[in-house]
Image (cartoon, rainbow, N blue to C red; front, side):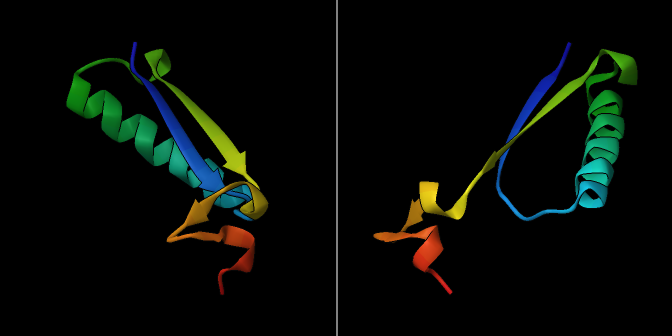
Length: 62
């Protein structure tokens, strides 16, 4: 059973996440030659104050 874990910054709409899960499920099942019902997708949302890039917090990036 494929399990996909995605970490994203907060702020995406439910509709965006719904579409992402739908597309990833379909394409993963196709590529892995398995049933869509067997796949799992976990979305982890991280606030911008809890990640950094290039020495700056996401909160401070523009």
